[in-house]
Length: 184
Image (cartoon, rainbow, N blue to C red; front, top):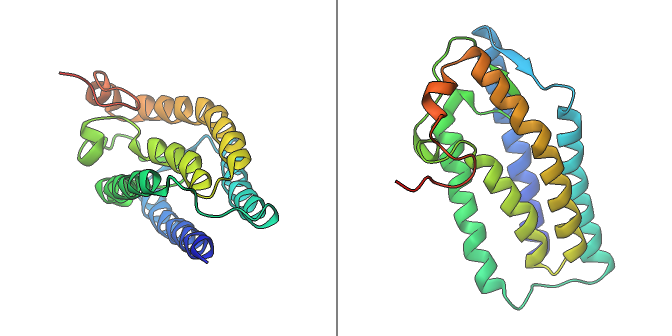
């Protein structure tokens, strides 16, 4: 029962994010925004849809249940959700599931972006690893963690290239780490 509740929440969360992304996309396009990296975007969507399907099937077919170490994983999941919403709120109208750049706009560097370049990608990576482990769905966790790593080796350079070309990204983020807070 707990799995179905969490799974339903994930679906609602993802659909809500797509709604917000579509609204933000319109806003950015109206301001002269241009999409970049659109050739790999369908693969990202497919990865996330297949992740959810794989998780559902692995739990149902193999009768998986809540792991014994849930008390370790659940707090990590809560922290990732805090980081997710902090990232979305910090980016405001600039948050999107696509790479849409408004030329000559100033890059957002508040919220978690004051510490690392890609907090939302860290969140997604942790979720793809942790959520299946919460229900002992090891195959889904391993396979989709590896696929996400491959996808991010394409996505992040495309995003950074577009930001460097059309915004002040280089001057804002030259000293920040991609995924971990810098030690000062």
